[in-house]
Image (tube, rainbow, N blue to C red):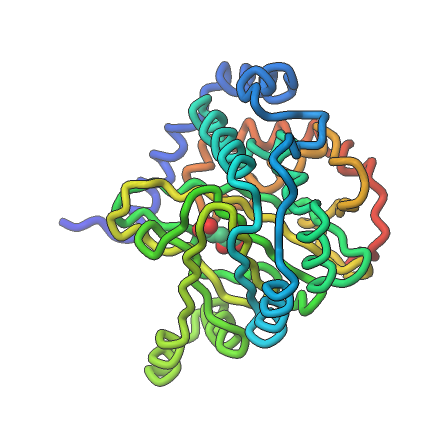
Length: 331
Ligand SMILES: O=C(O)CCC(=O)C(=O)O
């Protein structure tokens, strides 16, 4: 007899529950998560409480590239900039992710380190972001680090959009820390215009006509991006991480989001931070990480293993979020 989909789903839930961290491990990790010196020892080549820039040299975007990609963003809803960040910086950030993972943490904990908050602050990157989101733009506290294992069929996140009604007041930036190739699951997307119809159909479970499916398949854009590039999209763009077709290298990347100064913001993305101010406090970083961990079990169910840990750190750091006063009006 075959198991029904419901039985399979229940079995998966039970297995996930069994793999949850034990209460003892949860307590130990909570203590470790708040221990700044422990993080510093884990990645002595990185900083917490510095500027995260080291002596790697600033990021670089030529005027020509910036103008071309701003046009692409305006027309198609996405941009792709190659060779933006200094290779030494990207290598350091990759080592941070590897160290965090090797110590048994979800890789999003890489965001305890300065490097992950300062990456988009150098003048030419800031200038591109300003052209895309407007003067006085802000960063929200939706952050993520991706590790897609180098094994056949392992895939990045499934198709979704980040903020459908965000318009020009929203921009996601995605920075590969290893080469993201068509073979190991680079990002794919549907350009503006096509995305909306498909996203609405996915949300409402509505079948699409073969004509729409055929057209959409031909419109898919693959975004291979070498380590140190920066790509991104508006909130209404349907995008996804591809499936690994047999590449042995894991795919590592990070994602951050930017908002227009006067944008109406959702509770999930608050508080917003000013990219011209000092880097966010350590507690606010833990808040942002655990806020994302709670939400993104929908993309990465294995994160359920950390749920008790996540909830506790999230609760204990909510004061850090409340301490940030946000200029944008609440929705
Ligand atoms: O890296 C991935 O697989 C998905 C990234 C993504 O969709 C996002 O950060 O919004």
